[in-house]
Image (cartoon, rainbow, N blue to C red; front, side, top):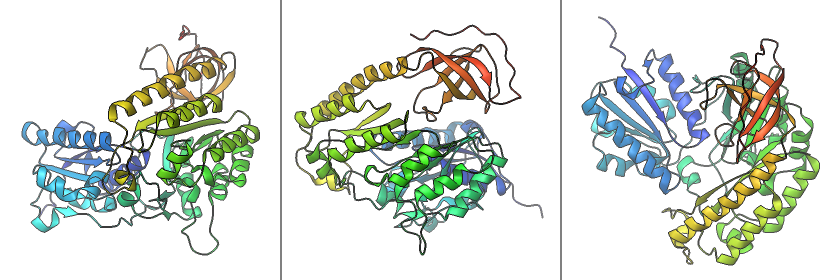
Length: 467
């Protein structure tokens, strides 16, 4: 008797890099199970959508994507639709009741169960929803994982879940309590990735700075982990996403400053700077903490690039409170700033607060903040003209087949802009030396002047002008 046919499978990954790692774990298990993974949803017999459920916009994107994939059950080859991730963790019964096209529903902690559900046979009624009340899963270095993006740059999740009490955030309910991986296990995964061609590792967790707090015995901390990872032979860059402001220790700053492989870059979400708003957000600190942290980072890590995000329109944010936020952005001279509008999420403490800010006001404030940051960003970009930077090449530019695109250490993948490269060629994953020649709001143009990899050869190409 021949074994049952294994269907073709397509994955859709939504949301944050932490979710992407989960998708890559599912991809690894799917490949190990002998399934064919296809790049086009229209060619798949089984489609898996890994959803986000953090705020309103993310939930809307997840729902729209599920419905789009569901249409392929009528117009394409799709015979089974599976939904997993944060949206289904948060609303499993709603997904089941309102989307009859969805065949199976898994939560954020059921990552390893998805591969076993890819068969095309009938699904028992009591097996349609498989969502734990409190997620507990945490992958390790032995877990099969297939990278969804280029091998030269990838994310490594060092912990799952969160114990912070932030009033606006639903993540602890979606992902469960803090669960840290052992230090040796993280290093082992990084070593394996480097052996497979990884040059840049982005360490990620909901809160990197609580890494190790939940482990028994002689607990490791983020500084120790970062130093160990940075010393993996063959690894060129290590980057941190996301640090909590009050937990950026002197030891951690010393490691960032002293280890050559650690890029001088820190992603540290501030959320706000008005003392009353911070108190209502349950952030556990005041504006003074943030001003002092920025000053300390600038002094002890010269040239450090700081990325942050702000939450605009939280209940109780007055015009005066927002103006304090604008003043902080002006004076702190942050390199990269993102902002999102408060989303009233059931199950969070902020949803119960008075002082609600009208959505139109919150959106207007977000636009004001980003206009301000755009002007400041151009000034910082302009200051880079003439400087020599090391750039990680990512491939041919989307703007022109005659240009390359890459990132310098001050640009994280997908979120911080790119460097357009001319006067040379290189392969994705190569490092080149380039001199900045012009700038835009978030992007740079540069001329290749040397190579960091002997396999790179140099040819002449017309230089782009962005300003």
